[in-house]
Length: 231
Ligand SMILES: C[S@@+](CC[C@H](N)C(=O)[O-])C[C@H]1O[C@@H](n2cnc3c(N)ncnc32)[C@H](O)[C@@H]1O
Image (tube, rainbow, N blue to C red; front, side, top):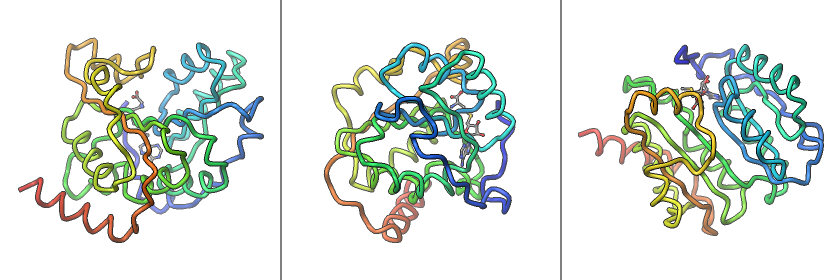
C-alpha cells in the first residue's frame, strides 16, 4: 500500500481536466462523496454498492490503482461511482470551482501517505490550497472526515483545518468517530490497522458559513504553528 509517488515531481504537476458530474455518473443530481487518495478503491466499491442515494468519486495519484479500481467498478456495473487519476493538489481546485456548491456532501481523507521526514511534509495531501479549494466549493454543513493511524498526521491536518476557521467540529459525530468511522465499510488501510489492534485517530468537521481566509496568510500561520508544535 505504501509505495509512495512524489506528488511534487514535475510529472504530477500537470493539471488534468476532470470530467463534469454529468459525464461521471448516471444521475448527476445525487450528492457526491469525494474520497481523496482512494487507492485500489475497495472502500468506495463497497460504499457505492450499499448506497444508491449518493455518487462516489475517488481521486488517486497512482494510475495503476485507478485502472484496477475502474475495472472492478465496471465488473460490478456501478454507475454511481467513478475513479479518476489526478494529483488532488493540482487538479481538484478547478474541478470543484465548476460545480454547484450543493454537489459535494462528504469529503474523506483516509490514511493519507504520512511522509514522516520533516522536509517531505509538503508532499502530504492536505495542504492549505486544497483545504481552501474544498472550503470554497462546499456548502455549510458539508462534512470533512479524516482518519489516520499516525497521530502526528491527524494532528497536523486538524491544525490546518482549525486555523483556517472554515470548519467546526461536528460534536455529535466526534464522540462516535473516535471509536468508529462514520462509514459502514473500513478502507483497506483501516482494515489492516484494525486487524492488528492498533489505534486509529479520527475527526469529522462540518463546513461553517465563515468566509475563506487569504491563502498566503493561512500558509504563513500554518508554518508558524507547525514550527511551534514541533518544538
Ligand atoms: C496510505 S494510502 C490510503 C488509501 C486508502 N484511503 C485507505 O485508507 O486504504 C494513501 C493514498 O493516497 C494517494 N495519494 C497520495 N497523494 C495524493 C495526491 N496528491 N492526490 C491523489 N492521491 C494521492 C496514494 O497514492 C495512496 O493510494
